[in-house]
Amino acid sequence: MALQLGIIDFNANPDTFHPILMIDAEDKGNLQEILARYPQNFNGIGKLHHHKVKLHVDKEVKPANVPPRPFPYHLKERAQKAIEDMIQQDIIEEHPRDEPAPWVANAVLAPKDDGSLWVTMDARNVNKALYPTNHPIPRHEDIKAKLSGCRVFSKMDFKIRVLAD
Image (cartoon, rainbow, N blue to C red; front, side):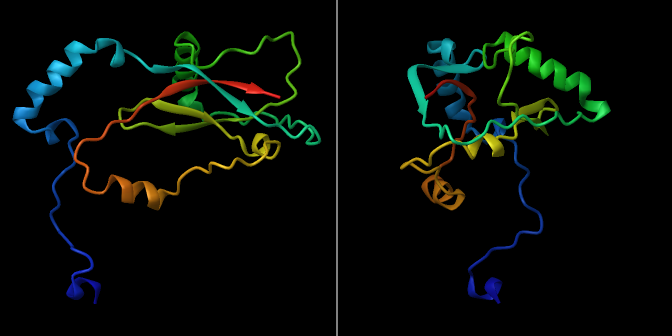
């Protein structure tokens, strides 16, 4: 019914998504010019400088220290390499082994398109101690609506220094 009303369009043989190939031939020269003009913006992972994020922590919430979840055996080496790379790139820092750590959250692994691993953390327990903000994270639908009609996309990683109360 939705197909007949024109609400959706079904293509049995859709174009394959190739991000690099989606740039028009005449735009590739412009892209090379931008890459040459601003190499510092495209070398490694960027950092958000001169901006501190202040988290408002509820002191009444007891710190959570959860036991670590083991990584799947076949991912252990890749996970360790990803963590070492993040430490080297100053994205994360290693907690001193001789100091107590009242808040401990598990690492979560997700595969990236290039075969490497995305390492994040399960922050559900940590989030319980944070006061809600007046600036909520935008909903998925809102982001998609704002990007409607856009042709060139990029993905970025960046580091934020966090201060707690």
